[in-house]
Length: 200
Image (spheres, rainbow, N blue to C red):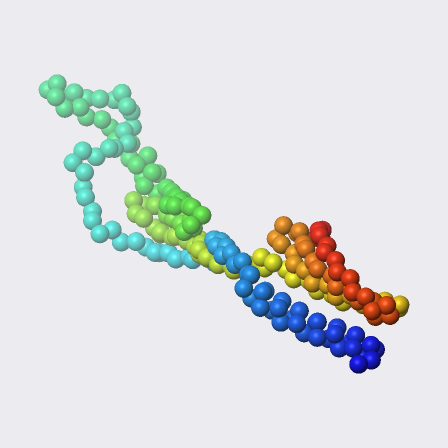
């Protein structure tokens, strides 16, 4: 067979063989690692309110605390009972005051935050509101695949009628080894070589 035809055929055959070998080795030398990540995503706030809460229970204290007009104004009857003058205007003023409250029931990174606000006036709870800032837990599993071995192959021609074929592997440590076959067509000689490769 003419060398001009024989050399290309050898290169094509080498490429096909290297492709098949690379596919088989690559499928069986894959190192897969699963990485699990957890993220907390903030969701839109949720609002709601109770305009006029109705008490489910009312109690009259047996010993109420009054606002007295004069702390030192006392009258002792039979050395037993002490009578103080109640400051009616102060009681009415305190009764008409509007008091606003704001409390955070919980606040953490896993379930969110809950805030409650309320208003008290005329001895009644005027309204009750809450705002919830939810947080959603999102878990993600990622599979990272990496070949334990990487194949390399190559072929070349020179103007003086020589050609070479090369086959090798790279390890995960970026260290490689290859075998090289060289054919001098004009002088009908074969050469063989082994190489140590480093990937940067």
